[in-house]
Image (cartoon, rainbow, N blue to C red; front, side, top):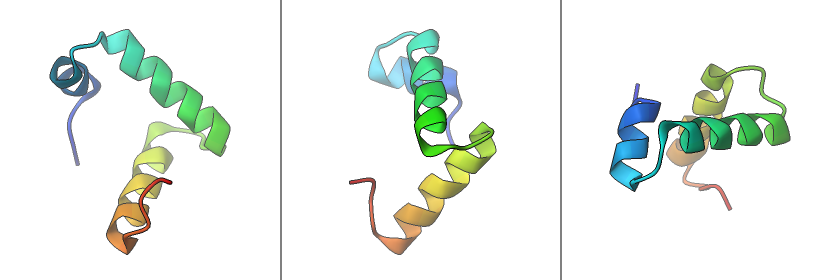
Length: 53
């Protein structure tokens, strides 16, 4: 569906662990059980043009 955590980390110049930790914190704050729910939420918001703000 998108880039792997490793690819995202490389593109941003940060470690794999930094991106993985960020995903975990975001999932916790939004109440998502897994990465699939987080990705689904992000894709739906982007397609609706509402962004993340």
